[in-house]
Structures are given as C-alpha cells and as structure tokens.
Amino acid sequence: MGTSRIRKTDIIFVGRTLDIDTDGNFKLAGTAVTADAGELNIMEGVTATYDELNLLENVTATTAEINLLDGFVAAATISTTGKAAQVAGADSRVVKIVLQDLNGAAVAARNSVLAYISSDSEGIVAAGQTSLAISSTGAAYDVGFLIQLTQYKAYQLISSSAGDGVINVDISTSDTSSARYLNLILPDGTRVTSSLIVFTT
Image (cartoon, rainbow, N blue to C red; front, side):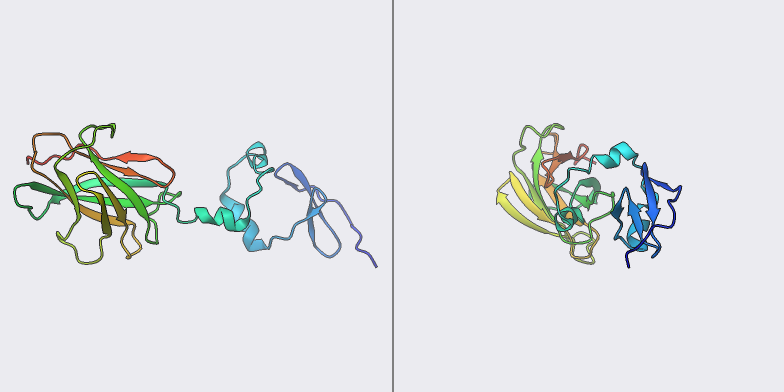
C-alpha cells in the first residue's frame, strides 16, 4: 500500500514548502529529505538568504571534495615576540606565525606555507643577507620545521605538530638599518606580510 500524504504543512523552509507524509518523512519541494536531525541542525546558525543558498544549485563538488577545505590554511598571523639567540655578526628576532583555517581558528594538523623576506611592505623586493631558522628561544615543544629552498631567499615552513598552527622562526640580519618584512604565500596564493621587523631595540 502506498504512502499517502495526510496534509500539507504550512512550514516554509528556505523559501520552499515542506511536506510531511503519513510515515513522518519530510519532502522539500517534492524531494525526500534524507538528512538526519543532527545534519539539519548544522544549519541552525546559517544566516544565508534563499538567493545565497541557491548559488549552490549548480555545485558539482562531492562531499569529499568540499571536505578538502576542512583545515585548509586560509589566513595567518605574524608577530615579533622578542629577541632571539644571536647569530654571529647579525641581530636576530623571534617571529611567531600562526596558520589559521577558514573559521579563523589555528589549524589542527601540520600545514605548510612558502616564506620569504622582503625589504618593502609590498613584498616585491627580496631582502639580502637575511636568514630564517626555526627558533629555539624559549621553546618547550615542537615549534615547526623549516626547509631552506634558496639561501637568503625562500623557505618552506611547516607548522608545529602540537595542533596549534604555530611556526616560530628566528629572523637574522647583518644589516639592521634596512627594513625587513616576513612574507608568507598561502596555498591559495594569498600573500600575508608582517609589520616592519625592528632589530635596533
């Protein structure tokens, strides 16, 4: 015996009428809703409008493909935290990097970004005679890993295994009178540049 609809509800869900059949199954605009309550509750804090949600109509990505964004490095903060152990003939500062996900939280798994040092805030002019190294200053745990790609030019940085997105580096230069900025290239190509790193104080 087929299922018959006993009534049509007055519930409007994202602009469409929500129907309930005699077995208590939901249908949205005639299509059965298979999500469970927990999955539907994920939308509780969604503020997107009907038109904004409709932008997803032609999305062909699978759940697995969308989940690739989980933990994706979308932003980073850079701050100078103090004076580092000195390198012979140079002055050094500790710079703390925190890699962040799409929600602005520190990434939980190891991630990697490209780094280089510039002499301008636009990240256009590469700085010479300035090096990066993983910091050991005050470090009580893993603070990341560094691979030097080109001396004084480019580095691959990998975040801490502690699940806090941290990379602590020492930036050292023998030319303390010149401007120095640390630049990160995120996976999507976005550049994040530090404020001016001051060596003379």
